[in-house]
Image (cartoon, rainbow, N blue to C red; front, side):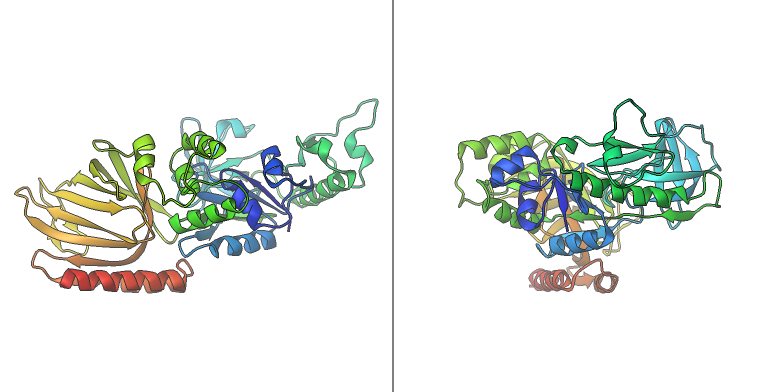
Length: 456
């Protein structure tokens, strides 16, 4: 399995995977070895929010890489994408927006078709043949990016619609064995000059095979949507929990100087990479120290008085924002307190307590802890109930507290009664494959400990 890797996790993943190809100059220098410029069976890219990586490529390669990554830690989770990169679908336009359209492709799958990615105007109710340009991780609130211009992707060579170029001299593709199908022309990548002719020929052969598959597909308007027309590649998304990021630190540390919490810091803020790289270049850190929470929050946040969101990940992949509150305290031990004013109406989950005007939710987060409590207080300051959420280790990023909920929770009502809730949801999540048995075992153990503590 050959792998192409890009993004903030590249050094660690290059150490994890064999047969890395098309390595960047920085990676070649860091590993002090030459990496072949050859076709990749799999591409690994850091997600836009830096929370994890997207795997796209040959289905068997994606499956193997996904297993290796989820083996890193209990809190590394992965999901298959029903709209894989380069997948072709017949969909129906369900909504037109200011700069594009929403296209439904069945089974809850939908994507965004920008106006600039289609040659013909579309309207609600139209059937369109679309290709996935940019898959999205399930925790993102963005839609998958689509195009009606069907192409064959690749880093060494792409095939795009159009006739082959004709000039007086032979083109590169004329020197290679595969014959490009009519109606396609190659677009060579930046690494073309460094690749061998054998590598370029293999890349062109793979692209040609995929182009011939696409040539057999119906054009716009047929068949009736929703229909999956072709999925030559597979795509999975991997989210790294806090334990997983620290495991990646260890892999990176075997290669080069790595500060404690390297990937944790870089995942939290886009502006952190330069600061981390600078500190590592100087060697200005204690490699045996613990994660410098106080220094990181002082530099990047969150700080007292700022607003922080609660990003509540779900084992099935979605991420919900439970609300935003004011940070009222940040402690050097890695904890902070968040206060939210609650709107009246309804009841608090599992507490069966009415939400009233003037209620305040006080939440205490601690970096790396497998749970966090929220105390609901009335306008008079009286305690109206406590809800303790069991989750993957909390990460306190500059703009959000982030974790994945593990279903089972413990609550304490205003009468002092303690109850453990949602064990059945955790069991169902294990049965569906969203939560591993080791992760579920940890969640149950945490819940039991909290139940005893609250009852004491």
